[in-house]
Image 1 (cartoon, rainbow, N blue to C red):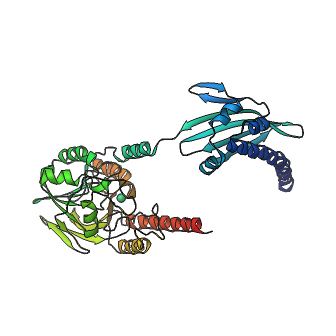
Image 2 (tube, rainbow, N blue to C red):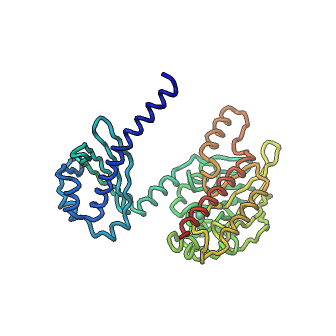
Image 3 (tube, rainbow, N blue to C red):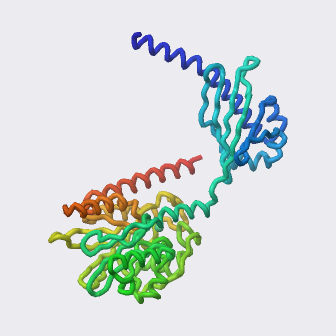
Length: 412
Ligand SMILES: [Zn+2]
């Protein structure tokens, strides 16, 4: 068969399918309307006596259109809250199979309908529906936290930098003979893990002298108040993020009062370009407002095997989930974050580390580092001069897409 002949068959097939598909779609639309109306009469008309069964636990139970209608609570409220979608529609051998979903903020219903031709049109002959409740926002946060808080074997990352955080929430211990610097603590519930990690590497939490922070959100400095009490370490923070720490995360421009923590007052404010020193270690702060107003990127140089490396602890520049334009609580947000991204690009970075492990492939690199050390070949995957640029490219793409989407939404 020639290509031409074959393509004619395809065209013929498509043409013959378009007819019944369109007809089936019409029936489904009528069904959606009846469902939205919550009218037993409409449902009966569309279903025409077809059995409607519903899964309850492990049982399939037959339900009447009246029972379905009794659950509906008014057209207007219903229509505005629900999303109805045809997930798949197949017509084959004189039978149509349709999978559709109806989503509300509380649950997601999946329905499998079978239709057959009747009286020159199509009729629903069976409907099996299954409703699953969605996790509540609190449950969603809970499961996200569990994922973020998964333990990670602590390890020496490079030079005097040690990773002592969890899977998704970073904490870096920089050791010196004069005591240690900790960059980020994670939330307060991460402290027992943090302490175990520090001890496992042969260090002591009590020797932490300085607490530095990427940005003043609960998941990065929620443990500071408790750590400060226990160790007497000094907290250094930018003025803007220091103020947010003093409010315990309240009044955050993006999250409001949603993610609060025990307030802590910084012992000292750190300005843009200022340096912090301890036991021969020197860290420079670069302020990168955006994700928070005082987001702070720390940079340092470390030595390993006779070579020196530039290390960047990126504060976090994600803003795409936030309200980007006409945001009265942060009008200059987009301009600020663009400037911050440009400043981050200019930083020399043999090694890029950050407040969340997934921004620099913590898990993958840690695994490869452990393998390299076992082999004794000295390779260190964290030395990756392209990492910062790749991450910033991704951030910029996200920002542009989110901006475009938000502008589309605002357009009439
Ligand atoms: Zn944050």
